[in-house]
Image (cartoon, rainbow, N blue to C red; front, side, top):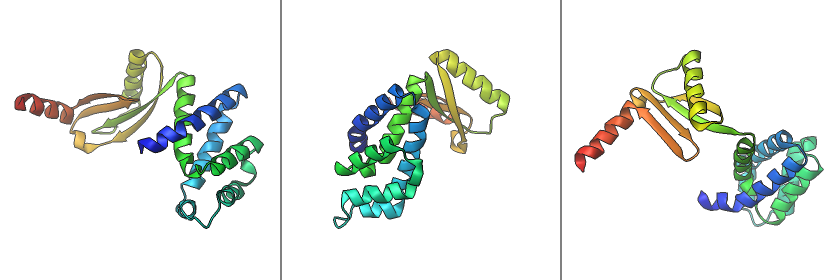
Length: 178
């Protein structure tokens, strides 16, 4: 949902600036992840659309569930989101915050899909190759996708490196059709 991400971006950037100034990036990361998981709960999501539940009550409910794991700044942030009718954006705010945090730390998130399981050595070699190419540290998440037939597919940000057999077959099909 691009619109939700667009609305969530200023909140994520504001929290990121606050966290960076307070040297509390990891603390805010944990806090936002917790708040996002609570906000994503089906029962709480049902209440966000209920006109009989005031936004302030919704925020108080979320804060009660989180308990003492929310500090004063986090409570104020959640109350601000509630006042603006944006509690449902907590998962997007958390995700965008994580992107800002990893970019600030010089780390890129990579999603690697392989047709078969990689050994630790193969995974480390692939990550080292990606770090060399992008000149940044890579935090890789590896999954197995048998539909690739063979090879790997790497997604880093907006860039996709498709070295899979399936990707090559699709490219050949497009070339033959044109």
